[in-house]
Amino acid sequence: MTQSKVDRLQKVLDQNSGLRDQNFVTPDAILVFTEETDTLEEVYIIELPLRFPLHGKGAVWSFEYLGKVIEAKATLYRQSIAANELAEEHDFKLLECGTVVLVQHTDQICLSWHKITAFIDPTLN
Image (cartoon, rainbow, N blue to C red):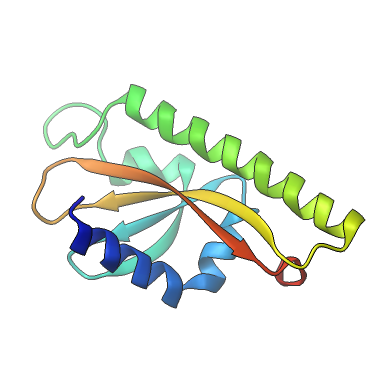
């Protein structure tokens, strides 16, 4: 992604910080950013192959790619849960959480994904 596209994604994530922060502790969904409309939405992992074909005509990614996305989501979810538990035990004021954003590009026929993190107020989760 070019720097301008990264900046657009970051702006949309900041504007939708509630959705982003809630997704940190949602185990079965990831965020999907659509460049064409600058929209961010939460999509259940089970729905991803239906929405973005994995094989055949119109395939935009592979089973291996999906596996990497799910693995990254699971790791970031576990880290976010652990951070929330530590915050409760030690009264932290900020904690770092993470999730995955799948990007649907307008100028490409493939998808990309990114790990995102943010420092959040633990009282919000």
